[in-house]
Length: 215
Image (cartoon, rainbow, N blue to C red):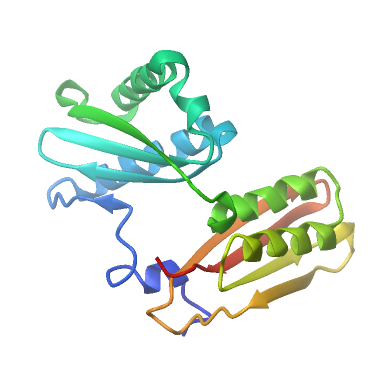
């Protein structure tokens, strides 16, 4: 079971919280689509700031968006001007795709820094993908990433790469692991991410599992 299910989904509830916290039975599909579009837009706009995940909290008259980034200064800007520009951009964007544009809730945007980027599976996978796009050695990228994760205090890390690695005619899988990554043990904090790298020879999928240290 641990091999086939997203480790964070398996642990949602006892270990991890939901990334979207709300429930509207009458407008469920519309609000769900809004969350998807908001995340997609923010992940693209904040890519340069090292965004990892977006959490959305909705209440009756307000919506709180929390972005976890590794370089918060880039988003906030001087005297908070960047944050204000981001808020205006989101309000304009929501007007364009929200069916309740005349009744937009009050928006609160928060930027949370990621203290240790090497313990964030998404940022680790994204870093490996960027190195592949620069035609760096896949072995070196995987080994360096694994060493940095372990050096940051993780209990274990597993990195799996699959596709036409190095432009090979036949796709294959490459794997490296350090420490222990027990996927079926619910009490362990396993951070997981899957990121594609679009190379000239096609997509290469990168999956990263990180057994986080105890808090």
